[in-house]
Amino acid sequence: MSKEIGITVKKAEDLSEWYTQVIIKGELADYSSMKGFMVLRPYGFAIWERIRQYLDGRLKETGHSNAYFPLLIPESFLKKETEHFAGFTPEVFWVTQAGTRELSERFAIRPTSETIIYDSYSRWVRSWRDLPILINVWNSVLRAEITATRPFIRTSEFLWQEGHTVHATKEDADKEVMLILEIYRQLMEEQLAVPVLTGYKSEREKFVGALYTTTLEAMMPDGKAIQMGTSHNLGQNFAISFDIKYLGKDEETHHAWTASWGVSWRLIAAMVLLHGDDKGLVLPPAIAPIQAVIVPIYYKETDAASVTDKARQVAELLTKDEIQIYLDFREQYTPGWKFNEWELKGVPLRIEIGPRDVERHQITIVRRDNSQRLTVNDEMTLGEVRKHLEDIQAKLFGRAKATLDASISESNQYEDFKRILEERGGFIRACWCSSTECEDAIKADTGATIRTIPLTAETPRFSCIKCGKPDSKAVYFAKSY
Image 1 (cartoon, rainbow, N blue to C red):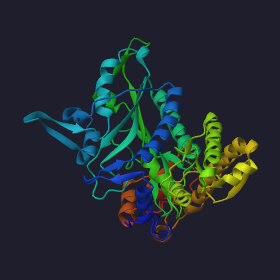
Image 2: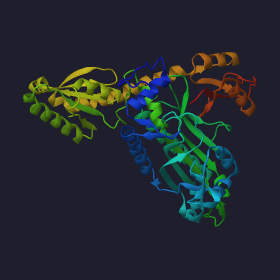
Image 3: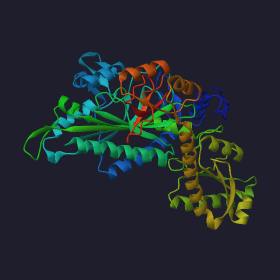
Image 4: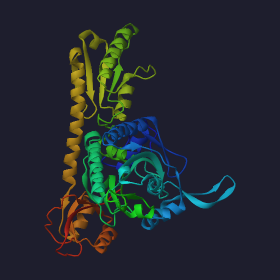
């Protein structure tokens, strides 16, 4: 990667190198000396905090609480749910020694927390009065599956949240799954300005051990999909394995139903890939840790006091309205250098204040999304800043939604299906007979998988794209990260 300060490649010409430069030069993250791991830098962590703040608030509004469970999981716990264990074993980091003492049982370093959490739930649930249990956990997990690190997309350790809930009935668990799916959709579309397709995963692609999995899928500029989040009904599999039972109102003993769900810092990757441009990041205002940066401009010491005073007044005005402001008083950098830095970091608005602005009782606003410059009278400052932040948010989503819609093709001939994947990628709406054999064959031939089966069944207009059977359902295929 180039050591020059700015982005040195075009997004449309080399997306992979562009993405790496934006992440590193935008100071979101850095590579670690340990293969497969990355360092989350303060600016990147601030974005994650904004995501967490929004989602944490939504979860608490709907009755969920945060908790924390151990990092190390006994191997015997993983083995209690056979399908789950088989699915995760190849990815597990194992602890086999404590100090100089060999352990009698291996401990897995948390690849996901179902088993360690449900062990606790088996002791906490006794009666129908104990239900539902609605717990969310903010933590990191480790999965030893990495051959090449891609910051925020594929790392051995990643930050995420994982919710684990217990319910009396399947219907209650189903409602939980769909509630979280909708909260996730709102996070992605209304905060990150990333439009998604929602639906079910196929049996082949569902979470190991789940009754069914729902998913949210976004499309990136290179024609590949990113799984943005999932919400699962785990049925009674884990409840039976971990003996989570309750005495019902009918005085009979029943196994509970469980659900789990999660999103990770992969959300940041999708946002960067979708909105960024050749100058660097373009952050949606709703999630940006700095929504407007104020840059005072003066070249004579005699102008310094009036310009900095006005900058502080504007910052105070906007901060009182809960707009995230950064006052850039750094003297070691020129205004032009600051402009380039904040463009690289994707701050939605830049506010410039110079001696002429002081004299004319105005400020200058520059939008990051389209580089538009506007002169705003002092008395209109708050309203104009708020208006443009809202407009940027709406424009970013609108542009991304148009791109998503344009990425969807439809095919009823297998050779045409393969040609579309090779030439343009994107989502392909096609029909599938529900057989794993056809699904496996398509993946082997093309690298594409069923990304989502619509929540509301769409009318199948064709036969199975692979075998031609008429009794088929409409699904969306794509290659993915």
